[in-house]
Length: 414
Image (cartoon, rainbow, N blue to C red; front, side, top):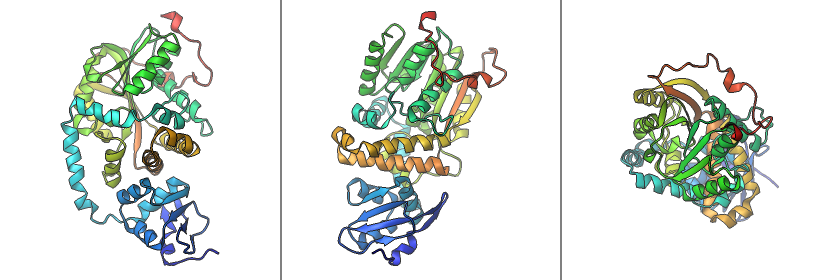
């Protein structure tokens, strides 16, 4: 009983990944719209709402979805792509610049108290909520899919080992994990690489969970977590990792960030920065403002050249750079699938609007990474002033895989 009405001419949209087709169902009994083999189905009140959805901006559409004014069945990532393609820039370029400019000023002069409040806003919602869509170790950053068919759990374990190998972790090293989350990398480094590991976070929920895990695994003498800003630490540390925290720094505070890490790092040490990068030519837009308001307040994405320049001004030299963009697209899709599969349990952990916010946020993130709108780089740095011997190739980073075959714990070698 499907038939096509005039708006369906816009329902088949060419995107970067090919043709997106959709179905539209109306709650008022209006016959549905069907466009080819649909990737997703919009469930709307009436035809008037469909016309509004085609014309309105991304933020208005996202807010309506979050409030439950319409639903989407099927591929949420395809639905985001469709909305992007059907929405013209309109007046956003002009009227949208003011809130982005005000956001830039706020982030430039953000205090440590405000930074802590922003971190609390995102991470201290509910450990149970994050546990429902992350992997078993609760790693909240890009996984490393050495093989596309790997499970999320295996890819996250491989990511942690990839970082540990890049940092050339050795038994007895003093290792710092800035923004340590729920402690997954911290624990992995202590248990499997024999280091003395310290983590810092501004999230009370994360710090408590990580501390419980350290105690449960009898690592109290070898791993610890402090509820503090990284700028309050003293060091020195032989190896430092910052994974998924860099996005909270933002361009205005890049040099301050790298100078603080430089101060914490031993002269012969290594620093790995893992974070999302905004590619050249990609500008801030309505989606940037949406994420700042509802998901990650107070942060911002930097350019690759801008990031490396700030690091060099702080005294670092770049040893290695690796783009994991395709890996993050797969990671976000895996998180989204888990979020959808665990809908009822998620709604017991958080309210309905939070759940729907994360749905649209992860779908948009997956589309961004898949379509080239965002990159994620692992950048390995050392202090330029220290003439330590360097590895002559990258073989040490890729030789073997600790996650493919669990290494014997090195704790006893300390």
